[in-house]
Image 1 (cartoon, helix red, strand yellow):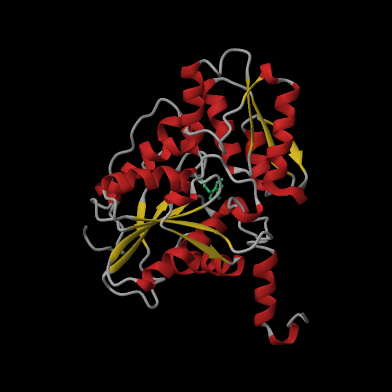
Image 2 (image 1 turned 120 degrees about the vertical axis):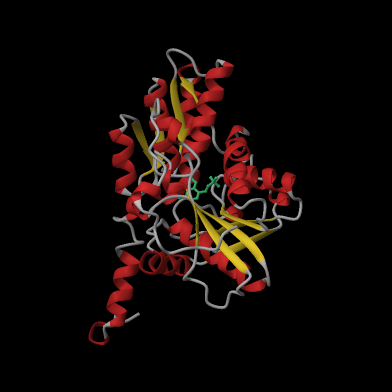
Length: 335
Ligand SMILES: Cc1ncc(COP(=O)(O)O)c(C=O)c1O
């Protein structure tokens, strides 16, 4: 692989944009960028690359499983005329399903915790999806339970992709994310790092990479505490464990504190020019930890989305604001 260059290619050297049939043709083939500045303590022969899933048309890694699950539903006949797509989602899957529903021509009904970011709620509505809110105190598990109840009351009406239990979720990553990473690293990847939500990304991508090279280390990242601020990630020990998640397939799991993840998000924006969501910050904390432990290697970390859909959340208001006040001696808050 050529070493990283900081000079952007002139517009004339960039490939001409391609014509597409629908937004769904733009899912996948996301860029891989090298992290070149947040490298303190990392040996020179260790390289860290981030896969920018925010470039998917629905703005996140979740476009992949959403499109795969809807397509499979249509192929199997489980999704057909008269059905509504129903699922529980902490946000990104809902946006992705809402987009897929519009393009394939099916109504979408989502169940999400009331406290997901206002940006996410508004994007889902912009795609025309119906939303039922579950208790903010019960997190994504509350949304899962309420969604099951809605389905039980009217099973004939809905097609439920069921991202937590549907093997097509990891399959999407096995068939797209994994091959893209293998190609873009020219088969040199040694470590793959991804956050754990449903586990679809780490399972599917991990399986593909292990098949290509069984020595690739597969590393899952989760919050270090049940009460965390890492939207999109699950603390498995205190959650309903997704049926598609098989921890024994991981080589390692790294727990990350919310504070460390937020700090890394801020540094990514101001030092690398990458404004991402909190789960990307958490994944990079883990990737940098691994990078400091080895002498040589190519680490690929998934950045599931960009930061603009969290502007109203504690990522950019609460915690950051507190940090700012803390840095001004006259207004240091008393704790
Ligand atoms: C922001 C964000 N990060 C990470 C994840 C985890 O991805 P997965 O469900 O594939 O484990 C999700 C999933 O919803 C997410 O929305």
